[in-house]
Length: 443
Image (tube, rainbow, N blue to C red; front, side):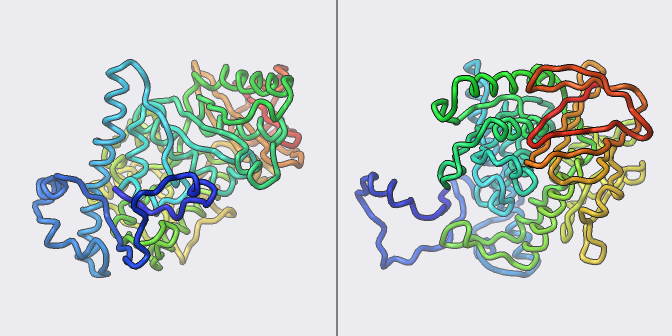
């Protein structure tokens, strides 16, 4: 499989010996992944000869072209998941170690098609799925960081696992001349990832960039977070539908780098809606997972009408505009809806936005006043509910966390280790967060 990620930067290229340089007179052509027995696998799976339809992999807007592309990329997704990610996992398990790592281009779901076939299916094959967080600007989570973290957390939970890994650093800040970042930013970056289920912190910070005391304080902070959260199970009542099924039908490869892939109006609509919905959920403090059509097909309804798969029990599914479901997945969500489950569909006529997504989803927790730079994560451990709140902004926040719970909460400060009691007043509890501050609430 060959994917053009663009030219090697000159400082790196100059140190790489090239025996057979590309011929500038030879025009590059679009490519698709292939393997020695792909034609046989495709024929067994679909009862068709892919060679007779291969033109549709590159061009064509007819329903038949889309059908062929969807079948092809579905086949690629199964092969990549089994023969690469699955093979690594099986080898690791046979040698007493856990497989882990992170995907490439996590933040671009269209690129998941040529890179993996299905990015969620691929990352779910790891024992400890992970992410690569090159920025220690905590606010990255409200832009695209949520997707980078949602992929491994979803892969873990949907497969019935818990542990999630991050490779985290201030690489972006140092490369741009804005780093190294300070201890408050490092803490907030760790905390929002913990809210997104991260348990294993692989650090790429240079210890010499900060004092011994700051390194120690950072370790204490992460240690206190994990003392509470590592053995706690993330609670995700909401899913955002991962529309890989529709992107399979729309994706056509290009000869140049991935970022030059043209976006059809349909792709722009699907990807734009998906990203907007994820940002809205994140900024409204609504924890969620990603789920694709295959996990929907594997799900079951429990006695409470929740859609269950792995360690996830869903009460709401948010669906981007312009997508469809295969028959089995459509049947499952229809049954879910009949049992009282919420299917929240985005559409051009009735768009789901920051302003109305909470009303549509009906989350357990709400902040008043609203603040898009507060990250909320919910967990369960030994019959107790744990909520983590992270202020990823420099500015302080003061408000009320509304929850349908009248019982007192225990508040933990992972910076100082201080423990105190919070008693609900009215419809919630008073919350005060300094810039980049994190608190844990337990009841």
